[in-house]
Length: 144
Image 1 (cartoon, rainbow, N blue to C red):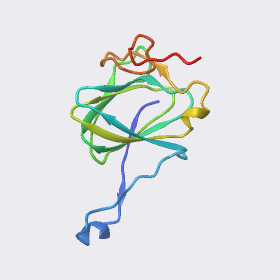
Image 2: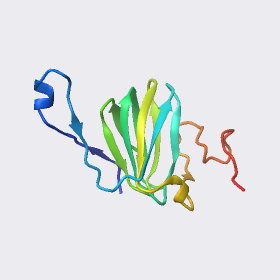
Image 3: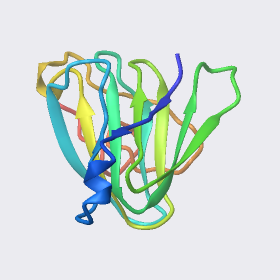
Image 4: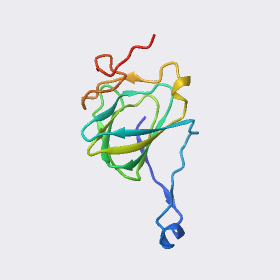
């Protein structure tokens, strides 16, 4: 399992007409929920994996690095992401996003978060702290 970058298609007429452009991404899976994530420069979102859904990122502003490990013994891999790039993270892949500058992402899930028994499992990928799934983080809240 690995994170993949989605390559969009483009109807070139949407560029030639002078109004801008339309780029189309086709997900492999049905999207059942999407979220707007705002990440401040130098901060992280992640240090976790999702056992019940695949996760798509569409970066709408800023630059960042998406880091992942395929298993505990593998070397970390990364993708540099900038505005307009899209990725797919399969369920079970440990990942973290580090914002180089202020970023906005649309994050799309293949299962509704609230329908998951275990939506998130904390992992420490060594890229900083702050994941709300980390029991040692000041942002963590134990659900009763």
